[in-house]
Amino acid sequence: MDRLHAMQVFVTTVEAGSLSSAADRLGLSRPVVTRYLAELEAWAGARLLHRSTRRLGLTAAGEAVLPACRQVLSLAQGMQAQAAPADRAAPLTGQLRLTASNSVGQMQLAPALADFVARHPGVSVDLQMQDRAVNLVQERIDLAIRIAVELDPNLIARRLCDCHSVVCAAPAYLAARGWPDRPEALAAHNCLTHSYFGQSVWQFTDAQGQPTSVAVRGNLTANDAMALLRAAECGAGVARLPTILARPALASGALLPVLPGWTPQIAGVWAVYTSRRHMLPALRALLDFLVERFAAEPAWGPLGDAAPLGA
Image 1 (spheres, helix red, strand yellow):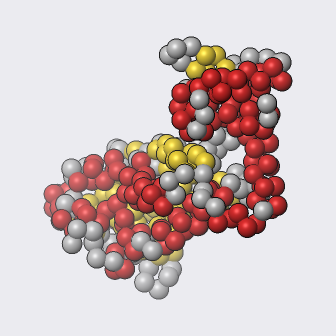
Image 2 (cartoon, rainbow, N blue to C red):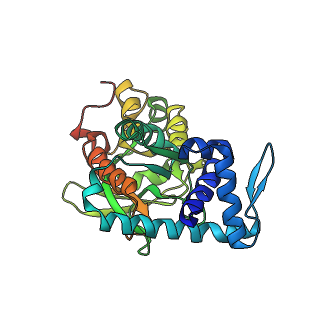
């Protein structure tokens, strides 16, 4: 049997989690999938998968062979794309594995991906929402969406758009604790901070573009912006939130913006991936789609750039 096809069957089986699911994705019968796997195991000289009626898992040999198979398949797809440019208009196929924070995933990425797979029904997407910076190679992630001021220079990334923030608090909290009139006044307030973004220092620029920083502290830190939003709505303290997330609460009056003359530090929304070489056509198409989609969404901008959501 064709070893390249056997590698594709092996990789798809691992991603799908079962022989039956892999057979459905590849348009093959389960016995054919089994024969391909047996052929690859014979070639490798080792068992690659633990298979049972309820569970499928990689053996130690399978863990070692899987990255090599992915690399070979990526090289083969790149060679095919270069050898047959006329086929670039062919329907996109394949599975993409993405990761993003819970807030970004719920607010924009999930709806965007729904539109993308509707346009390209041959592409399937596995979205993993988790509020930590994952290792793309170890966790077999094709694309990560991250919000950050700066990225590791070793990462490859495309900036999707700017991410503006707003400092805000519930009316009840402000009535009890007073309104901060300058960034320095935040030092006297209970500030709700993000574990990975400005946990101890918040940075601002004034109307003249002059920067200032203030040390902040509080009794609640979270690694999820949605959790900070809910805590702020309950009157727990002052939060700095992405405008796309805070707009509904600001529109309803559940939160009120403070420090209107000061602009919180602007971050970027980034699409991060491992390599520009031999990029799968489906991944390249998704990147281009997300660049257009995120840049066209004014809710990421400052409060004055778009009407609040729900207004």
